[in-house]
Length: 90
Image 1 (cartoon, rainbow, N blue to C red):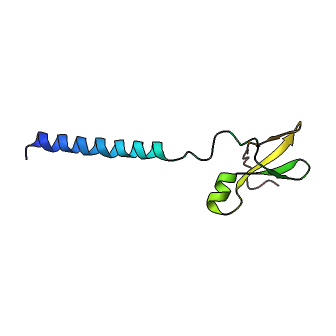
Image 2 (image 1 turned 60 degrees about the horizontal axis):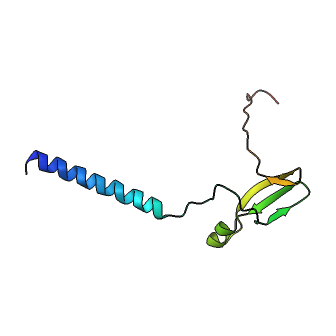
Image 3 (image 1 turned 135 degrees about the horizontal axis):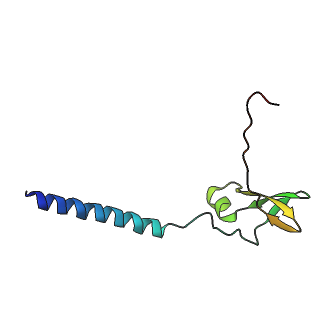
């Protein structure tokens, strides 16, 4: 086979592979949703709670969700901040 035919065949195969991957990615549901469900139940104490993600809970068969805190009557998902300390300090 001439070299140009092999190069063209390789390009076609790569294009089909990437195209099929993009199509499959577009068909898959995108979880978790970027906005929390306002009707999602919150299992809570006074100011700390757990917002239940119904879709994941139903799909996996176990309780899933995110930790939330109450600020001015609204449930807000906190952002985690990691701080490092030297090993020699207390």
